[in-house]
Image (cartoon, rainbow, N blue to C red):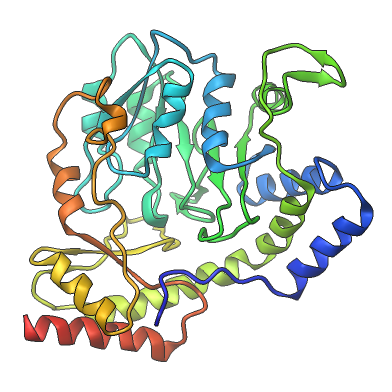
Length: 359
């Protein structure tokens, strides 16, 4: 089976974990501080706060802005539900936009139509490894804080700026299938030191110092073991992103010209890091998916429903999102991860072509 993802832990990561375990400092410690500095610097930001997950990164960034009941936060209708649930954690209301049909990211004009005097933050999602159109989004947002959901975009670039460095903050996930991992974990980065200090307090029971609780906080810290893994993974991120891009180029060339299949579109000025290689299948997506699975090719639909259509959102979601709803019926992600050999990528291409030939 050619799998959709293959998290790689090598000797460097194993040695780093052993070093931390032998040190006895397993919870928050110097490893976390070093990882915060190294990752935020890589992303082009001054400050970082490491946390327990990508979801907690969004939650804490919103909490640090003071988001609460009566407020609205705008995000995309086409993403994983964790792009919206932290808004509900804080008693605020998520409001959804439709998407750009080519990139699957937040449509700026749809965003413009959703802004009200209750809008207190905007969360564009850099889906599948390509940034949203941040230039237009920031123009439309004006003074409304923009929080970038970068869970799938480690190392992605928009107009020479790294994902996470363009808005008020960037929020990352280090889940095992991401472009880099800490096992589980997340990070908030920002140029605003006071904002990051607020997140650092909130993640640690609201403490400014031991037993000095300034706010009602949470227990959402990153462990030293996770940070040690992340520090090693970060040194390999550029090489692995390059391998993803190489595999994507082979897929682009091999799938070109197949009737009813649209390969990923990359906006001019963007560096796509291909967290997922997602095609649009305009006819019988499920038939193609089944054929691939039956022939040993991993594939997956990210995402088969919009966020607003989820039962969890039934009390807050209104409106229609025709481009996002169309995408749920057509998107299909193919293997692109950096552990693939060129022969394996070629087999993916050949199997797709064989499926379409018999369709």
